[in-house]
Length: 308
Image (cartoon, rainbow, N blue to C red; front, top):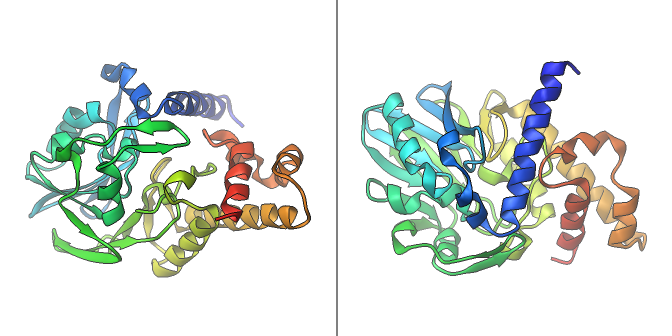
């Protein structure tokens, strides 16, 4: 590994450590950051699709953007202090009106700017996202209060819906009980780009929100189905991490399927959670523990998913 690569990995690790530290007291901890130091990097993905990601601190999950003749459609909107920076980034992409916001799930690092941006746009999500934003949630990270009414999605669906916008037949599809109970992925057929929300943590073990309907085994099954549904040249916007492709998504699925099966086999042999954590996963997966979900936390998520 080069010095440059080592420095990048160290910086990434520090940001992710800050992520888990803040999340331990729910998303409120993030709001204490100095957001003046955080900027948004815009990446042209393909066609009229762009990705916005925070630089210089933790701003929330990756944002997807469709920009064209009909205006702008946004996928997720990070933490609440980012709304002004999001508007600025969108204006640099396209001067058109922000018309729709799609929420991939309910977590505050993906829906934090809903209330402010709903002044401009209509929010759409799976029905469970609306229900969870309307009420206090209590999960691994602590208590999250109910969101303001302005943050609640106005249009919801249960299985799937199409949005005909900017010359594309955008597919918004629910995949149940993976990351949460309300996850939806978005596919742009014309550009062959997909935004997977937090169903996809690129290069690291994912967070599975067991308290709000997530399950490691369902996540693995969902990713297998998603892979089968997408063309081989699809570009993938993950919920967290760098822009990826089908090769990256297949590597992620290989990790999910292999590690969940391994923990399941160990449990079937009578080993306790502590036993499995002590022994660890096969060494080939060690590098995936560089995110805020460590190897021990990922084993715990898998083990606890068995009961569900």
